[in-house]
Image (tube, rainbow, N blue to C red; front, side, top):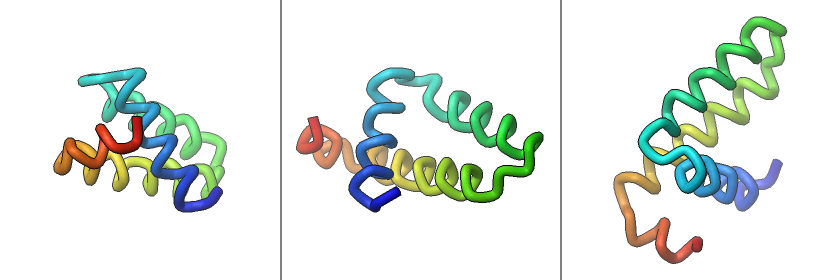
Length: 65
């Protein structure tokens, strides 16, 4: 997954799940841990980092929409 796709996913998760976005990411990571999908875990961790950056800088989120 490209960096652009990770940022787009982060924005979509925030837009779709709002204040429950972090819980959604945690659930996704938890499910991937159970099936030992390390690549999927790393991807969702990257999405979480991008989500945090978007929440810290709301003007970036507005530019992506």
